[in-house]
Amino acid sequence: KGYEIPIVHVNADDPEACLSAVKFALEYRKRFNKDFLNDLIGYRRYGHNEMEEPSTTQPMLYDAVRKHPTVKRIFAEKLVSEGLISEEKAQNIEMAVTKRIEDAYKKVPAKKEDAVREIELPEPVSNGFPDVDTAIDFDVLRKLNGELINWPESFNVFGKLKKILERRAKAFDDDRKVEWSLAESLAFASILKDGTPIRLTGQDSERGTFAQRNLVLHDSETGEEFVALHHLDDCASSFTVHNSPLSEGSVLGFEYGYNVYSPETLVLWEAQYGDFANAAQVYFDQFISAGRAKWGQKSGLVMLLPHGYEGQGPEHSSGRVERFLQLAAENNWTVANLTSAAQYFHILRRQAKMLLREEIRPLVIMTPKSLLRNPNTVSEVQELSESRFKPVYEQSGLSHAYEKVTRVVLSSGKVSIDISDHFNKMEGDKDWLHIARIEQLYPFPAKDTKELFAKLPNLQEIVWVQEEPQNMGAWSYISPYLTEIAPKGVNVQYIGRRRRSSPAEGDPTVHKKEQERIVSDSLTRKN
Image (cartoon, rainbow, N blue to C red; front, side):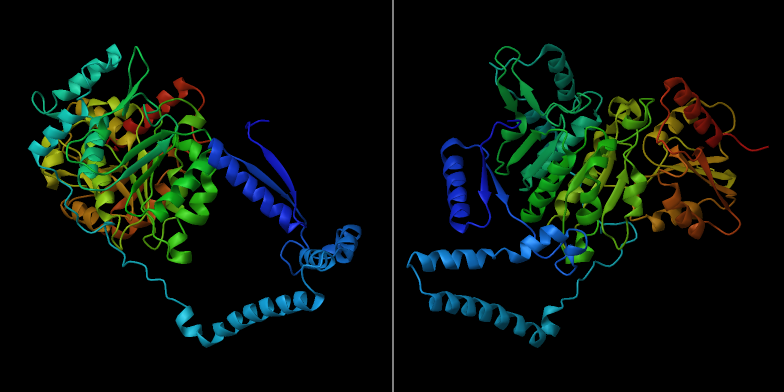
């Protein structure tokens, strides 16, 4: 009733009825192209692990089960009673099947050495992926940008949205700046042109949860849809984007399976808010993080989890980056928390280029919310055409008087932009400060971070700043790394929210005060 589909209840003791039900379902699907449910009614004969004694807790039920003939016996007696086979024939069939199974089992010891296959993990790479060229020529980017806003003349784009899209059209001619969503669209377009199919699903992914993406346009008069990525010149790669229901486990599980069976496709799953990934935690734990170690199963699945403390409360703040970092080991996946459009562009292109290589791994990105429209995340066009992904990203506008620096402030994600805003407004001496962002949290970019420290000969303290509580966020994961690579005598300190049971405050006023304290403390010299 709830799903408006047929349900057929089938007796599992009746093989012919089971086959009829399956045939019925197939014919129904073929004719009506709708779902069909076969509800198989059976029982468990040997308890939950087939080795325990279920009669200790269910004596009467399992007394009945022991007296009940097996499916094999019931079906054999039916065929014999109807004169279709003899009792001897039934016994011969059973013996033949049993022998085939026993013969297969006996082969295992003889092939033991061959059967036990060593699962080879890629060698740890200090910064994650090998160096990959992800830059795109300026003229190619400009052409792609033109194609992204090239809808039919008869198509009526909604007025406000049309103005936003037309502003994007001028990005390569006027200010030459690219904001987050345009960088994503350009990354998708260039990946498709390179021959890699793309599949994106998630809650509101067609428009974007924060009305930022708008990959699917709707005619304001007819409701007709138009997807510019379906109309790129000289492009044979498929692109699909689907809005999905708030059933995170179901959708993520499907997308993981899709990626495994179509490894040449860039498959992305997006949560409406990163917090909602909680409902799919079993897939992260059992499959995505551990699949390679368990089964040698490679995956290049991308997970986009909107994350950042905006005063919206506990269920709309944290993508629980600490959980992904706790599961991080043996080069099993990449966890990133980005702060610029160019960084996002390059990491998507890097993932696409690595899909069929041995080093491929799933990619978890803590994507922004308010930063989607923050001018400090906008990138120059040349950062797309001449640069590549940087695991460690140094704050622009800093003094190069490295010998004066006594504190280096490290952070990741949205709080990095809050720090940048505050730093740029500061007056007086700022040469004692150096600021950098750890954009790729795992694999930890130890080499790049050590090189940063080496430039600061008089460094006295390394401060890790985060907006998440101390028992959440990246602190517990990153503090041992920072302590290990810190120059001798340099202290590693934490600035952020105290340890808490809830991810965020429920009061926007309290949130604002705490956020101001965190940023101010990180940029204030000790007496």
